[in-house]
Length: 436
Image 1 (tube, one colour):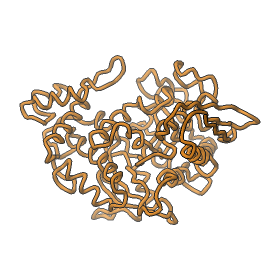
Image 2: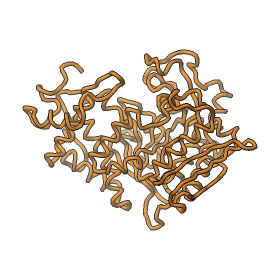
Image 3: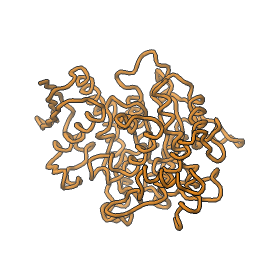
Image 4: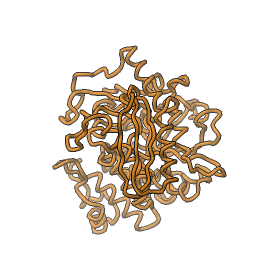
């Protein structure tokens, strides 16, 4: 049996970065922060694909949290995990979020709706905010990155992102793009431009935008003591085993579109204005399926390929059948764009040195039948056409009990699409919803 022991950090800091045990669902049986750290550490070990019979113990000694990992595992891999885990939770990275929070409290803008409900969901209750960096996700085994807005409160309650509808839908897209199911966790690692857990509906929906682009720019992107977003991106985009000969870092998807949760692309636009394409009026653009490359810092060793994409749950929220599959919010356009996003990561997995424009062209060609992702999606492959249809059916038909979930499984949705009068069209009259 192997044993690795290390200090994660001071309790005064980690108590702010890990959520209070009282917020978690009772079935997790958290008593204190040691239970919370143990839970998320073990989740990260599994996400990184470190196999074996592993036990994680956490203790508080002399004001510091100590981690002990016991079991039968690859010692070299676990040593790498230890070093990266310590690095993430250090003054150079996640701790910078604390400085952002302190500044918000100083200015009186931390949780402006504290004490009041902001949505209809009784599970969320009254508005609550707490810092929440990427907990329970990959520490070093990620194969691609997502940049999103903020983590929903329900994730904090459940102690995992896997049960979130956003991540369940993203997993379906990844599988259909060709990512093996046992590799899915490596493509769900993300950083939020606002690392603040809050109610999942109502905090960012217009007109209730309590976490705007300005908040990320002002409090989590600034001088070196609080440039949380860039620091975390720089770290996560280059895992410990990233080959020196690779031309680029891991690719990143910038998730959020004009119809739903646009703050992440908005932050990206205000931060990397000079490298973005401009429209005829000179306005820097962050349009869905726009691809390119950038350096996180001017001194960063490698460029990072990027693709602007929809928020991963947007299709389920605003997608519908319309008379024009080439214009938002048509569900067929949503599905094709989202499948391009997943395929972008799949192609980079196979060849990490390709130019991002070439990767986007290949992904668009698969799902749109052209290289620029314009017009109505027309996949050349018959199965891809059915895949697009089935995913649309899952997003169009929803059940709310016992908890929100697609009415149809993927297999059931495929069967509906195959039997439709217009095979492969999710919006043909005999299978589209009567009333969205």
